[in-house]
Image 1: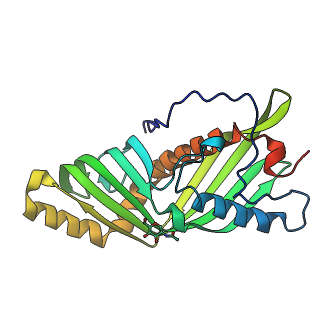
Image 2: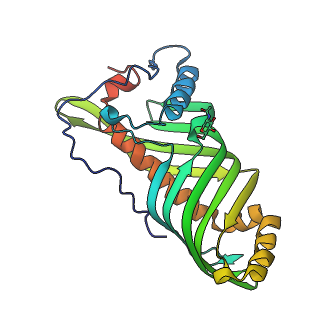
Image 3: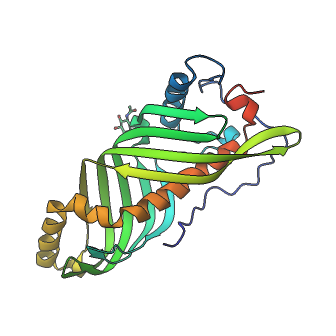
Length: 247
Ligand SMILES: *[C@@H]1O[C@H](CO)[C@@H](O)[C@H](O)[C@H]1NC(C)=O
């Protein structure tokens, strides 16, 4: 899989002084007895607030999240076509709920278990290959909604020092997605041959989860990298001491 091109706003903001969390963010102290519950609420609140950019902490607008280009590798069992996306907009994060967020300060592993009820993608797409035994090709606009999208995201953090302050960074990430249904539409499939398009869309509708399962690792890797990149920019701005009340 090619790495997604993440052209996040490229202003060269100086990183002279670390900044505290925005006042609207909840602060949790690793020493408080209900730290994990506090963190779960704090992360959920933070994600939901990202419907506007929080420039002071280098957080992007997640509502929508814009991904200029993303290419996902062909599957190995069902969908033998790479999926090329341009101008992708991802939304639905404003309704995120998190059932569990855990941070282990010894191993520096942060685990999130969150659900985005309607994880919506809008895009320009291009496919050219085979679906089951049928040929599939087309280029146009489209959308998809992952319904009940549960995301388990694990970050392994590292730490470093900058101007006498400790900071975290993301050294590794893993994303697992599971959804209960997929709704979608692809315009201009088969270059506008409506009959062929309807036939294949029916096949996709009836087998959406199974088909997506064949290519899901590529999406998990791409979105995992994107989330890691967003989180890493934030971590580079806010010293560790301001995150979890550590010394
Ligand atoms: C989230 O955004 C969508 C689309 O803008 C909107 O319809 C919905 O009401 C929002 N939900 C919340 C909880 O703000």
